[in-house]
Amino acid sequence: MEFIRNNLSLNKSTVKDVLKLSLPAVVEMMLYTMIWTVDTMMLGQYGGDLAVSTVGISCEVIYTFTNILVAQSLSVGITSIVARRYGAKEYNIAEEYATIGVGLGAIVSFITTIFIFFFSKKLLIIAGAEPSIISLGKVYINIVCIGLPFNMLSSMLAAVNRSYGNTKTPMLVSIVMLIVNLTLDAILIFGLFGFPELGVAGAALATTIANIAGFTYSAIYTYKKSKIKIHAKYLKKLCGFKLKDITLLSIPAGMQEAAYSIARLLTSMMIMHLGTVAFAANQITLTLENISFMPGWGFAVAATTLVGNKVGEGDYKKAREYGRTAGILGLSVMLVFTLLFLIFPTQLIRMFISGESTEVITLGAACLMIAAAEQPMIAISMIVGGIFKGYGDTKTPFKIAFLTSWLIRLPLVFIFIYILESPITTFWFICLIQWTVDGSLLYIFYNKKLKPINNENIL
Image (cartoon, rainbow, N blue to C red; front, side, top):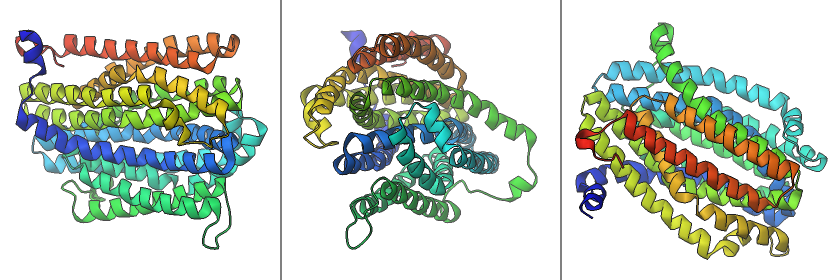
């Protein structure tokens, strides 16, 4: 009991620091998820499982690319390296890294958008979408692509602000985007106030305008008030080794996201093989699970920033304390979602689709109850991964993600879903296995590679 009490006791000032950074980050990501959630809910009421499946597979295609190349790669690299330079009080060097990272990201964003736009139909075909979904999905993707570069640039500016502990501004950006998207979704999907009824195209247009509005707010703030600013002079005298530093951190982080995202996309293709009812039930469950990810993501952001700042200062003991505190708090919050998914599965699924789709609701509720058991290990995986990144290690999380996604998840899904055509609930049992192994390995490797003082557990 003494061991448990010592490891669960938390320093009040450390808790305050972690919550100060993590809570705005949690709200930010919940609001970003709400943009997709609002699209899914409104389109579910407007067009049933066909509309839900269209937006689901289209978003999988879009965000697979943007997460791998920017949101979970360059943005992670920027936060990790700038946080440590800021902690070391090397402010000019921090700004140089930030500028190089955003400049590189702008180029990547433009190329990515052009690729997705011109190959949207082929990407949907590769993803295994049915003809009815392909025609709608192409329209959705092409409209969203108009605002996609602004979305990716916002992600990198948010990474710059987070690196010095400012998670409030990215949260405000997400509020702006949600308000714009929510308002325009209702107007453009259903054709309110004299506007044409655009359905799926209306949802895409609302998302595009919201992305542009969010970037505008973020760019103005970063230019005028950010402690770490973007200066064109650093691009004129581009430093090769700093570009290499960012790239070396970003590539493993991007590969980690690729391991998850590509596996998730391939999984979606195989699940689509089960039909639109199973796919719609799965997409709604994924949407709810994405909301549950947000606390874990927020505490992971706090861990990366606070640990990175303290590592930059050379205070490794405090870095470990911040990591441990973020882990305990994040795990506690995500256990709340475990209870919600177990107690109210049917009610939660009904929020996303009309009551007439009884088969989708029944399947979705069953999937959500299985997803409830994943929450603790997802929390450990996300937050410990964030701590690794604060130390500047993006390789270990990538290796574990590759193992669990490609050597556990995909083979099992191929056998049980694609070959044997087992019920969609089987897929969620596979996910439970994947996250259990993922979180356990990250925890074990962290305790071995980053040994704390007095042999205390890190979490």
